[in-house]
Amino acid sequence: MSAGYRYCPQCAGELVPRNIGGLMRACCADPACGFVLWDNPVPVVAAVIECIDRDGALLLARNHAWPERMFALVTGFLERGETPEEAVAREVREEVNLEAVAVKLLGAYPFARKNEVIIGYHVQARGEIVLNEELAEYRLVAPASLRPWPQATGLAVRDWMLSRGMAVPEIVEGNLFAHAGP
Image 1 (cartoon, rainbow, N blue to C red):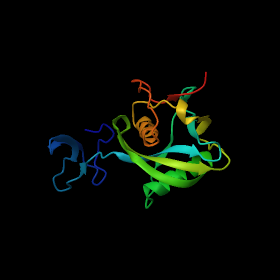
Image 2: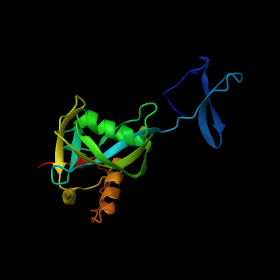
Image 3: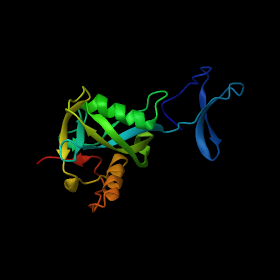
């Protein structure tokens, strides 16, 4: 049961645990209300960005909140009425100022720790890289030197590498991001 909610968002009654379909769900205690907190995962898009005007280098970015040398894919949430393809192109434009010229689905990946489902895309992009306020820095990485990590966006990197016929290095458990630099 989700620890984030204590009261019903419909009637303000107390939420209580109930077994629904074999899972414990937070439900409104008032039977007349009937609210159930399904706690479905949030869809998030992720971009394996191939910079077509930089010899096909891949762009990895570091969020300000992350430790030094920890990089990952550009990610973001879908906006109301937006397709995942539109969302990933928008996120690439907003976060690194690149224009997506081609967007191809890689797959969907569970990210249980954050209750998200990551929808990964290969995005071919071009333009001048300008970071938005969320990002501290970026790295351009040669595809052959990329090392996938074992969760969510790292699995999208692995699938991108496999789709290109590349050998995929062993995925090291415990790594949540790519490590870049000396």
